[in-house]
Length: 115
Image: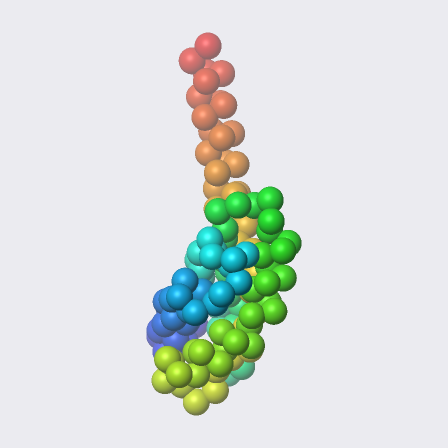
């Protein structure tokens, strides 16, 4: 990726986080954290990776985020200085759960070695 694309993706993460925290009124979206954003080279499409505090309502939260994508994109037009705001798709970030699972396995191995 180019430096320009990385900078735009970083700016999108910051602005989307701020919009979710202050502008979106849906209570399902309040405890969402934006972890990463991948933008295509032509800036037409952005995959926004999110994680949430309560995994029990993952499907409802993801549906609410994807329903609010148009509103968030509209708000981004006011805040981000690029000609065309990319289409947004929100995706649940599995990497944090994956890391926690690996950490549990390592802890279990250490416990077995100590016993």
